[in-house]
Length: 414
Image (cartoon, rainbow, N blue to C red; front, top):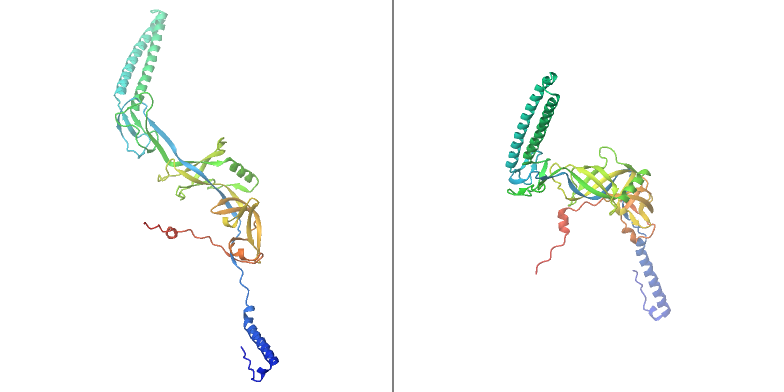
């Protein structure tokens, strides 16, 4: 800063001293103003960056996730059809058995005796039938020669037919005895996995009713029963009639995926078998059933699961991340970044969510940039501030190691 030199003579002149002081202040302000000039002419800050996705129409499968429960495709209760003492169990509990495989053995002695008695009765009836037949054949030529009366011949023919009927009764009794004898050996009615034995050796079974001995369940394939709201079913049908959706077709039509209790998806897809025609009056739900292959026995009957069902496809639909859509009672909106960087609000019509994304049916055009991230940056900016659109990338899922590192440390014991 310049320094003003004043002579000793000027100190005795007040007017000259005031003028000198004013000149010094002016020079100081001029010097300071020149030093501050470069800062005032600096460049404007760059526009804030926001993450966007480009709207791309495609055919989107309408995935619905519903609660369900697994059920064996075939269930057979093995029961004692013959009364007696259980002598032996012939299978290993929890193992796989084949149809016709012996499972239990009931004391066969009473049934063997009944079978022998039926065989003897049949032999006696056959002997009587043979004798009656011979008598009728002997009377036949004699009645023609009037050697015997017509009445005697008719009695002989009737006795022959009665004897033949007794043979039929005896044969039926022998068949019944053989069936009862076969019931003493309890076999598997179907192939599948057998559970624990419900009775032990020495127990009296089948005395008054058919005692349940074990349960066999066929678990390959498995059935999964699930329910869907009747309102959702009607809404989907109306949307199909309006042309918004089309029924899923092709080899993967109505494909079914099973989500286990731990959140993992079962590897093999299933297929929808049927949907019930009746709505449950108490819950307003419609029951559906799907068939899922289970070759390794990983799925167990009675397990609660989630079912992902593709019932229809939306043609030329656009999917956007759920965080890009604001849902209110007035409607669903999202923000579009125009080519000049300006932001504009759009009211859209969305459908069901799929993989953390909304399916947009109306209100968005192909090629438009939908703002997904960066809303916090605009809170401190004046309205109408232009932005710079950059491609948005979905965050990577947290690994178990990262989740463990982010978890708070346990408190130290006192």
